Length: 341
Ligand code: SF4
Image 1 (tube, rainbow, N blue to C red):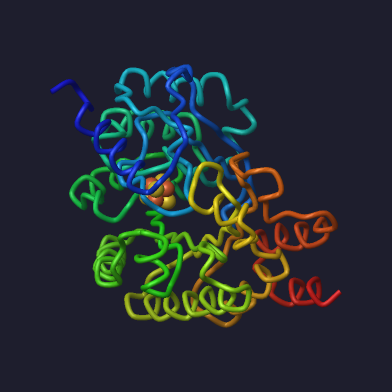
Image 2: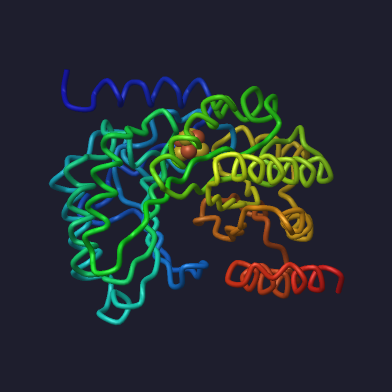
């Protein structure tokens, strides 16, 4: 079978099963990443880079159309290496290379799934990062838990220590909703608590960091209040895990937007779903005060929301500023003041 053909077929089958109607970006220039943006996190200036590769093999999560920015066919290591050259040779100017404190790498799926993202390219990225970005303290890799290969990560972590500034490895895993039924039956995440906890234990044992993606109101079955409660329950749970394994955990909290060509879009048009209010997102964040985790609020819909389906509404500017300030400071007091106005 041709390279990646079985994966192409699996993606098509699963996309259809999840009743998603989007197509893929097969005409994207294979030598350029799919997307990138800069943000500020606790480690300082941060580059979020989405490499262009074959799409996520899981494909089923209810409101997710991230795979639609990817290829349904295999993208070889030489092409991904050209994308990496583009990042370090064209995209970043010298001052940015010097300033970056954190880089997050994604392929809108799993960077650690070698069927969709080449291991050669991953090692090449590390080598170039060590040379070009001497002050990166944290490198984050997004992946589903089942693709994590601890022996591979051990080698990558060793290479990361060879840069001028030793770089810590952070694994970023999608959890999305705390409630088991919401997460697995409604959202179709396919993640059991047992799997997550085993992975968290391993992350701690290897001295890595853990980022966990949660969503506010990911499915129509959650009311606004239930959505805030689910995030608060998730915060309490992650805090217990952080204490149990003495592990640094960052919750990356994404307000849900209505992604086009998904079942969430259908529910939105039928009047059965509305994205969460930013006020609710901020209230959910406040549940982390005094807990052993940090929280980062993602405010980028990557241009994938349907018209009117974003969580950002007119008049939200002050709240956005307050949440962005919170991302830099973790100052709960200021955020509480901002939402009481
Ligand atoms: S949320 Fe992640 S794992 Fe789920 S379909 Fe989207 S990219 Fe794949």
